[in-house]
Image (cartoon, rainbow, N blue to C red; front, side):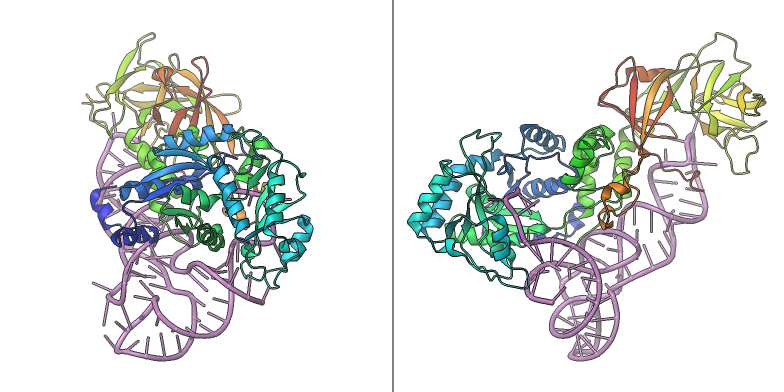
Length: 553
RNA sequence: UGGCCUGUGGUGUAAUGGUAACACAGAGGUUUUUGGUGCCUUUAUUGAGGGUUCGAGUCCUUCCGGGCCAACCA
């Protein structure tokens, strides 16, 4: 983004809050946090949150903590911790502190006793069914049970017994004593601690009671002195509770602000659904290139910059949204156009014999690596008597506006000569299997004095010198634009043709292809080497196609 | 049907009582040794009614639509 654009871009509501707070002297500097739960991989929706939180700190000279919200040991795992750290770094951000909610379990336990001592929490031995029944509904108030009348001493004693493993899982919970008649269901004496005899990825078996989200999240923010705690809209009703705890615990007043989460067309953005796609084998893993995960996008060939630019463009607001995936594609094309090396790969070969090239003769053609980048240099591509062109680049009965090869017509071979089609050879079924052409004298690219003009330029590859490659071409994972609007099982909407594997006939330079490089297969699309590619078997993932104003018609 | 959040082109996001703008998508043109890129043009918007005001997307009011909330998940 240019400086001018940055200046002109108006502030979103969270930036306005931050600026107002800074101006009012409420904080000297800001501290934000990115608080993932390590129970799945990060997706592009998280990227929006990462760019927001880290971006806010960068813009206003603050800092950002990475904090794992690991209060539920049964779903969390270090595998996820590692992937999350990796993804945040890959996106280009550095956290000042790496924290875990579990770092605060002792403090949080103390907070719970403090609430008990203030008469603001009690141990409830009701079953979850009973509690649900007593809780009421949005239109009917709930009611308290006999356990809420326990003395402070008794509550303290039993809560300590819970901590000491004296009570079985599910037998009792600690609840905050707030207001069973509140119109906010979360204020109706929410559960704040539960018993779980589960091994925690960090604290091991030290604890058998674990705090609930509302007993941990805001308190962790407060412990860390987070000034602006930014989360998504579904946490709006939690804000009242968030503030209640800070007030009753008399701790640093972090403030929560909520924005609308990202939704993208033709995909899902819920960890639960993504996990199911992985577990039921609809995709090869969390990093399957069709997944909207950060790792999937990375493997697909997306760049961190393109994702950051996308997140900047979609803005921050409070209304539900469904962003067209073509906007994401715009940003990756935009970036790749500037950095990708242009190469030639034929996917559906048609043999062309250039009859006036002597047998065995090899002519090296100099081709620019990237016309968008004058520092990208050039390479040599061998041209000889027998080459492949794309089958669709030849048409026997071509319409007037078809600029490629036709019988008797001419076309420029990219970086090489202009050829003229002399003869069409067909098999017994009438299918075109070979073309006999001749090249036009003095028409070599860069030194063309032939005076022959061609409207079309096509890519090609030497039959003898090409290297084979596997090309993985992806389509959208779902058949419907708005997956979450579908009332049935979202699996019904899965596009079973989202992966197509095709053969590629690549120019020899691709033997030296590397992971970190981006390629544009000319006139086709952007590709990147897959993680599983080897020198024996090249595998490329198609990131996104080039725009195509011909095929569309 | 309780409470909270929210309605601006096809999709997003701006406009902070004063000419409804920007990006993507769509359409057309132009340039081009990628039917890519670049450049130019263009279609299309304030949920509805009423009110306040010289003037309303913005303020008031009624209605309508969408989302969230009754997990020992986060």
